[in-house]
Length: 253
Image (tube, rainbow, N blue to C red):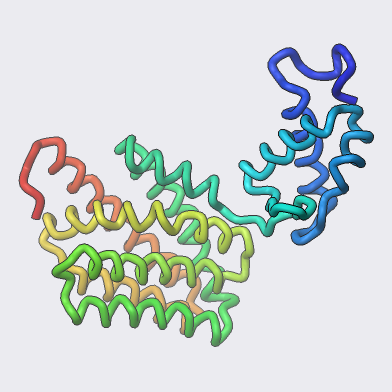
């Protein structure tokens, strides 16, 4: 019980203690779509007021674990990567080192994604990868003269990498890339500047993605992994060039 003296740590409120305990129950016992017990039942179980239960439930809503609606009991949410995505977006926007941290993580995750996709991908999975690549190619053909057109290109680019992760058959990889979508788009805007500064075009980017897809289709896991690794190392060089350019105050291309 959390309302007895000594049950809660001095730096924790009763609501946060209840929230922590409920979080363990949600993650360990309940499936998405399940309703929590009523406020009255929870208040009796934890020997706290309904107001404390209400505060605890709001804390869990903030963590993305519960969905609240007027007149209904709190419902367990389908997991999503919103909190993780917010964290990544924040460090990319306010800390240039965050871009390097992200590319290091991508090197580990995406080389593995490509390896597994070459081994496990279905025809549907390969079609999804191809569709994203075709979107990149078609957007590039129309020209990237406006921010909206560039955003469309980067969105298809993110979709390509997410489709590879999903084709790997590993649900954790798919979840992570869903969460990384927005931060990746923001990073792509920066890396494109370095890409151009180094004398490359987005046609080269499309070609790099095509090599990854070709090796996945052929079931060549080693070649798919190497194609992904080379693409990401190239992206890392683009980011370094772009950030160096910004630090020196050079005009953007």
